[in-house]
Length: 142
Image (cartoon, rainbow, N blue to C red):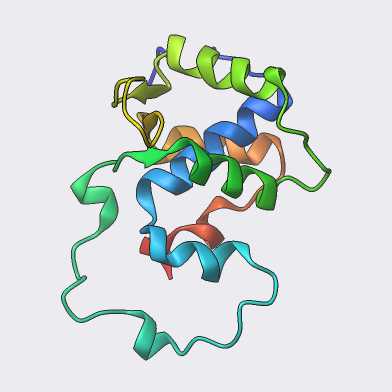
């Protein structure tokens, strides 16, 4: 954690990192619940499965595709963000800083997959700087 305390990131890189953390630690089937404005009413009893008692944070980060990362990013950023080369270069910079890890090769048909390698304390500190309540969007803290 001490190595990451002095990292200062651009504004959108912070949101990319937050989106990557959410994609790594939330199951993909929960995206509709957390990120759509009018997703319909979901009962909590139907939503939580009996076999899912193990925390996703204890299991570690899961790989996620680039399109899921971008979809989460566009839903959590208040202003409209265009998918420009700037966004993709910031993702590459986060991989270079070892905050994200590229876990699949570029020759696969479905595109690159990433994992978020930062801790919960670090992502909470980053989310605090942009006034984003990340705990509200984490499946483990429902």
